[in-house]
Length: 295
Image 1 (tube, rainbow, N blue to C red):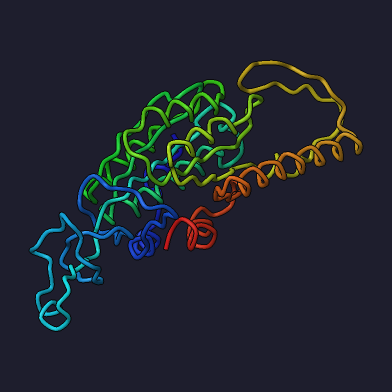
Image 2 (image 1 turned 30 degrees about the vertical axis):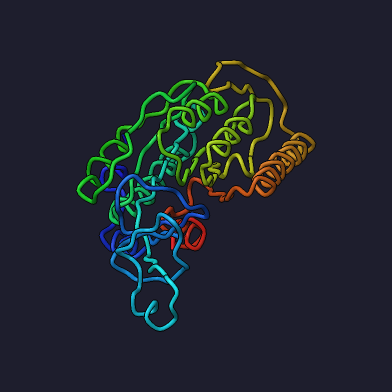
């Protein structure tokens, strides 16, 4: 297990994270009162607005001063506060065990940063680990006293198994009791695709963000000569000669692949964020995710 996972982040970076909160484009009905100002109207202590009285409204919230002046019944509205459930879905298949640092190292550190923000803001945070399917998880929990437990769980995540993003994401969507903000962190290197699994989350009303992690070697390979490549998940071997034409063909297929991912996310209103595995996670979180997942 990489030593960097034990400490995860510096105290200075954690202090920066404490000043942030999660941002969701949808309104979810939380299970318990939290610290999130909801667009729904409730009966908390913070006054928000008035509306005309309707049959069945609680008479305790009628403003009798307005009734005395206007001879019409109006009820007070208050800002309702609720908790948001953050779902961190991490691809831990064998293909994520590539690069230095590995793609999985980057993925769990991103999950750790987002989970920390959620817990210190009294949101519910859960983790799903994807391999052939959802292999394990950390059930949605709230409270900053759960930060150590979350980081310990993420530090123990090891790569293994094949990739089946459609099945894994579909299973997670069905098993989740509460929709919320879902952040899927993966390299998306699955011959079967990922679209059907992501659509399953959308159908269950999740607000979905996709963090796409690739290594510098995958983005810009520097291979040459006669090679024998072995698929890390299936063991399949292929022999090829990497000359200039082969490199150009690879880069064109990669461009098309990335363009398809971006188009899919754009048409489905999914947040798309790409990260090289050797890039500083702290900078990625504060620069690219801020204003989109964090505020």
